[in-house]
Amino acid sequence: MGLPWELKCKFARGQLTTLFKGVLHLLNERFGSVIALEIAEELWKYKDRIKNMTNTLKDVFKIEGNDIEAIVNWWNLWFEHVGIEATWLEVTSKIARWKINVCPWSTPDPEDISGWCVIFCSVIIKTLNPKATIERPKGMCAGDPYCEHVMRIEE
Image (cartoon, rainbow, N blue to C red; front, side, top):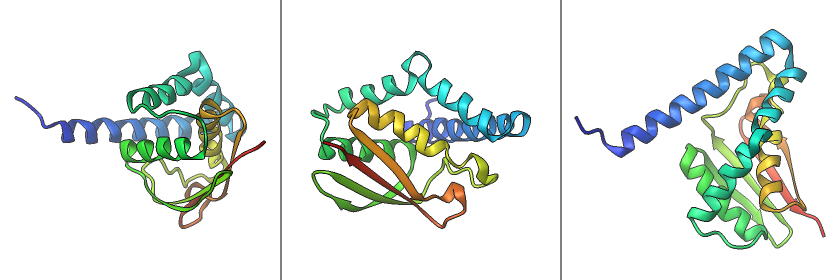
């Protein structure tokens, strides 16, 4: 029986988010938030997992450069692939701000592991541009109604 690609993608995406949230939750319960976040970061960096994923998307979609425009293009691909609904609030040559209203990766309970997203996004943007930084003034994982991210490229 042939299954539609859309169904396969939706199933895989759902399983990835469910597995991620479950593992992070169990690590937090067993070892506490500090250790859970350390393990998550170590896993993402182990054998360059997130760096390789980042570069794969960049290469497949032929994203050239490491300026804000290239990084915004990368994020747009990521949002589409993982089911995030985001709006760009500001994009200049040095800063990009976006708002996320729908995120299947959201882990709002418990809030003490809400920092996972900034750690994950930092690995991605450092791969795309080592001079880039990211912060998250608002986060659904921290109990806010939406996420807001601010990325800057330092001189």
